[in-house]
Length: 258
Image 1: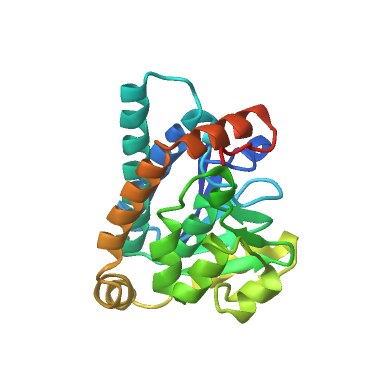
Image 2: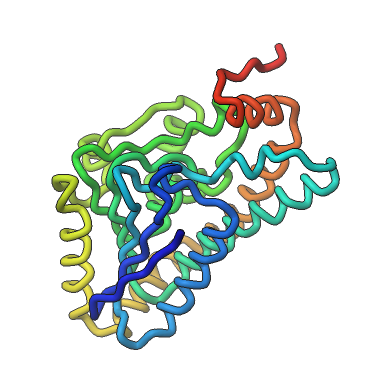
């Protein structure tokens, strides 16, 4: 469900689960971390593109796994492990010494949007959309909040996470979230061309530039991500989350207790 194509000096990681809008299950999160580490060590790869198969980038985490019935103690342990794995993946992307470009076509929702923002740059298609719909299911997107605040400020984070707004490609570009907009069939082409242009610069200067942005200027991001992971895990233990996850699994509107 995670495939990799190397076209030196760049490599493309493809979230390859189009029938589920590339929602990330536990295996995909683990595989993505392994692939990123492999590409980190490859001397042939100087920049990385992350794309989704089919008409969507990533619909977030596969909530069907989180809604699977389990004993309370086991469920809590799974949720804690899941949120820690998501935090570790985001930190891995931020700390990776090679530039990452997200090639976003279609929907980037929830953790899918977090994945895009954890990349250094975003190329989007004209039909790309960005949203954080977790509160509608009684959940908290703990990875999204720190990343949006770091990249774009708390006002946008509030608008997406509390206000529930959805950004189309044009508005995302206007806000600086997206750097280039192209036709859907050109998303990967433009991202890969950009990756190859970036790779012409010395690896040392690229690494130090990324380190400056993500580890020095954004020195508190790691702490905030840990808090976000804890908030997500905590939200999963509530009655509203239980109803939201059931509703998601049963494909019906949630009926939250009042």
